[in-house]
Each structure stands twice: as structure tokens, then as C-alpha cells.
Image: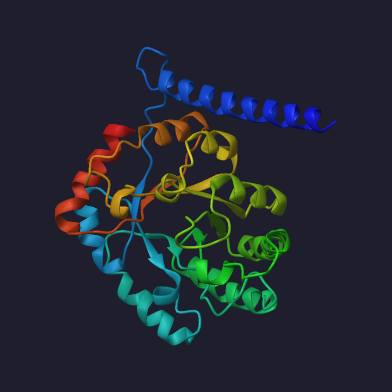
Length: 297
């Protein structure tokens, strides 16, 4: 019986490896111009930045800004303070389409000190103000909120995340906002470290306003290939991109991300792409970043 179980395990491992290898070869074949006519639709490109950077980014060809929940929507501050920020942002030539840094570390999503009721109240303010600012997406990375405490079951943490997602989806829908769950690499968080893990949670939540984000930088940091995009592409609503080395702006070190982009196209992705990158000099790098993505797309 033990030998049979071992044979079964080996067989499953071989099948999984074969499947992944076949997907990679298919992507390589797909990337060749003669394979078949692929979509030439180029996505809207934005950047995780402040609205004050709007003029530089607009001149380089960017389409939108991805702002910060904590510093722009200021959910713990008064409506008057938020309105002042919102009014000032109207000087930017680019719209604000999305928001990062959703939950502070003090609001725990998982673990024995999880505070889902407080998160729901917080999210109500965030989503309402995001809509008021013209935004459509709120990114759920929030490593401090969702890190699993030592000794706490990952299975229980997963159940908590699913339960929280089921609470957040309907609130987001009320304000025409979509929450997008982002996987984070293990250097930043100890939970939901792959697109496939995040995808399974999104599937379990099963709400149209709670979807998936593919962060290619985090995927590369974890050695996760483009096959995960093919498996979960139907759930994707947003994409983040940066080079693996130093989380650099595309075009800095010449990293080729084309297989990930081609997987997005093959999965029928029609959403936007944001640079969540470390800028050395935005004015000098912005146009090259757009050019690099276009060449590799």
C-alpha cells in the first residue's frame, strides 16, 4: 500500500511538471509571429504614484494614477480634510483609477485578533471616497493586516480571508468599486504568496466585486511562472508590473516579461496595467517604461 501511494504521488508530480512545461512551451510558440494572429490591443498603463506626478506621467504617455488609500483617501480623517485633498488633485491631468495600501497593520484580517467588523466600517469609508474620487479599484495587499501570527493555522487564516472577502464584496458593489486581491512575496508577507493561492480565495469568495490582481514582480520573486495567469486569468481585474531586480521600472535592467504579457493576452485580459516600481528618476524613466512594455507586449 505504501509503495502504491508513493507511485501515485510520483505520478501526480510528473503530471503537474509535464503540464507546466507544456504551458511554457505553448507560450513560447504563441509568442512567434507566425503562430497565429494575436491581439494587438494595448492596455491602459498607469503608475502607483501621487497625483502631483500626473503631469510628468501624462507627458510620457501614461493614462492614470494609482494613488494611496492612507494618504489620499485618509479614511481615519474628516470628510473636510479628504475634500481638500480631492480638490487639490483636480490639478492633475490624469484621472485616479485605483488605490493601493488598503488596510493598516492595526486592522487584522486574520489571526486571533482579527477585527472584521472594524474592517467593514473602515472599508465603507474607503470605498465611498474612492468612488467620489472617480476610482474603480482598491488593491488588497496589506501585508501587515494579513500576516499570519506564529502558531496560527494557515487553514484557519484562509477561512478568515474568505469570510472577509464575502463581507467586502457587497460593500464594494454598492460604490461600484472592485477589490483586487494581490499575492505578495515571502519577504513581505507569510500568507497568500502566489497568484494561485490568491485565485483560490477569490474563487471561494465568488463575488464580482472581489477579484484578482496579478503582480508580476511578486510572481517572479516567488518563481511563479505565467501558467498561473492562464489558470486564473478569468478572475483577473488588474495587473502590477516591475522588474525583479530591485523592483525596478521596466526598461531599467532589460528584463523580459513578455511571456507574462502573452499569458495575459491569451487569457483574454482586457484590464489595465500599473507600474508598482521604484523610480530612480521619473522624468527620465517614464517614457522608456511605456516603450519597453509596448515592445514586450
